[in-house]
Image 1 (tube, one colour):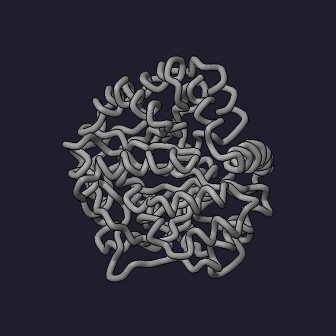
Image 2 (cartoon, one colour; image 1 turned 45 degrees about the vertical axis):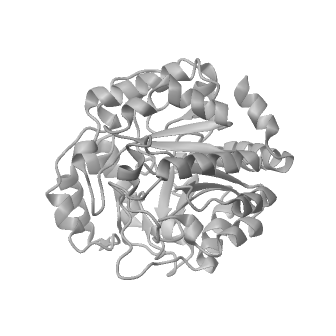
Length: 392
């Protein structure tokens, strides 16, 4: 298999950290999460950490708003989150922004926490040879590079210039530096034909990409662009493409919306993952920018143990839908937030009113039930958190 050959081409230390920190520790950590959940205890299997809300691009539908000035999470609080996770057997962390490579202490975080494994969500424009070399030396990081369209679409989607060429260059830079490299696509109307094509997937295989992560476009932020949202049939098309693709492409296809039987679920509603923003607030997920609890006020473990807000969110959302509540019923979500007197953490003063007046659109919850055909994917989805925690 080409994907195995490509994995064996990666740096030896990177392979070892991936297998042990991500693979073995990940399965053990997921098992501990399942036991906690069974006993009615909340602590996520892993966290997404937005280390900054600063960014060098301005993408359609992005939920991140900088505000008057960029925010960065002090490294001592990043350490606090990681160390709390480690105490609970959680060693996997998604690092988000904004653009996380604009966070100055980022490489220091990776070097310091060698027992953990990190997925770096990046637009790739700042992923230089020197940065890739540092990631290779740390060996506990997999870059996940956003790929939002071809030469005609990418600049529009990302709000920049020559983004397609820069994305290709960043992929080549990571592979050349022997990193375990992934690509992510936020599938929307303007890129679905590209994203779900043999040519696109095989191009990534030829470039040496090891995994391809598909997630569904969620209109949010200052430039919502609801016209880009997928219809129910397009979501079905995405799901069918992935299920079939897992039986024929030499690349790992990741999704985070359906279990092995094709049943939809919400990672945040399951308590599988939560998001911590650059101000230290714990949000259900990055798109749902409202919170009650802040890690600066107490230990991370104590917050999860005592948070009535997060407990209510899990219980009520799971009754309401297995899909995405912000897409399916934003008005209900508005009323839920009002009841819990949450803090608006979006940096957008009109966020709550915007949510109240947003239209309902299709999410993965309305997709037809299509079980996995590939038994390896079925096994991994049942036994580990792989593919079960998208922020998208």
